[in-house]
Length: 324
Ligand code: GLV
Image (tube, rainbow, N blue to C red):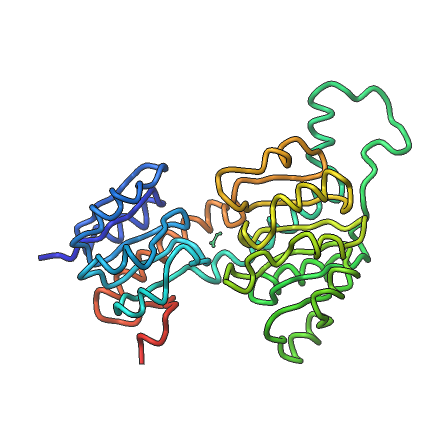
C-alpha cells in the first residue's frame, strides 16, 4: 500500500505532481486551509503532512496523530509547529530555507524604500487626481543612502539585507543572540552592538529573527521610545515580534517616522489604527512570494516528504536530533 500524504492547502502543481508519483495524496486544493477539527480528521492515518504557516500543529494535535512520520512546512519559519512535541513522537519536521532568502530580502528592502520615499502614499495621491503642481516639499521623505541600518538577526536573510544596505553605502549595525564570525563581520562591514544601541542609532531597523519565546514582543513600547523620531521599522519576520498596538500608537503620534510591515500579530487581522495611517506600508505576508520562489518552496517540501518516507534524511530537516 502506498503511503498517504495530506496537503493542507494549495501549493504549486509541481509539488503535488511529485507527491502523486510516490503517494496517495489527500490534496486540499483550496486557499482557505482546514479548520482544526477537519485538519485533525484528515491527518489521521497519514504518514506525512505538507503544512503551511497558517496550520497550527500543536502538541495536543501531534499527540493524537499516530503513524505520522514527517511534517513538511512550506515556509522557512516553523513557529506554527510544536517541534518539541514532534521530536518526542519521532516526527521529522522540515522547512524551506535558502531558496527564499534573496526574495525575502528584496521585499524587506522594497518596504524600506517605499516607507522612506513615501512611494505608496505618492502613488495613491497621484491616482486620486490630487497632483496640481510641483512643490518644494511634495512627498518629501527620508534618504536611504549613507544612513544607518540596524538589523536584528544576522541569519541568512539578515545577511542578504545587510548586503543590500552595503549597496546603498549604509552603515550596518546588527544584534543577534549569537555574534557572527569575524569573517562575516569584515565581509559585510557589520558592527555588532547591543539592542538598545541599535535602536538608538539606526535610521532603519529591520527584523530578521525567528519567532521564539525570546523574540516575542522584541519591539514594544520601550524599544519604540528608544528609536529616533526619523526612524523607520521594517518587519518581514513574524508579527508577534512587534507589539502591534504599541507600534500603531508610535506611528500615529509620529514618535517614529514610518514602518513597513509584511507580517502581523493575528493574521489576517491588522490593527485598524494601522489601516488608517499614511506613514505605514502594509503587505499581506508576501515576502517570499515571487512565482519562482513559491514554486521552488512547493517542490522542496514535496522532496523532503519523498526522502523522509523513503527512510532517508530529508534535505531540510529542522529537528536534526532525530537523525543521529
Ligand atoms: C514565511 O513567512 C516563511 O517563513 O517562509
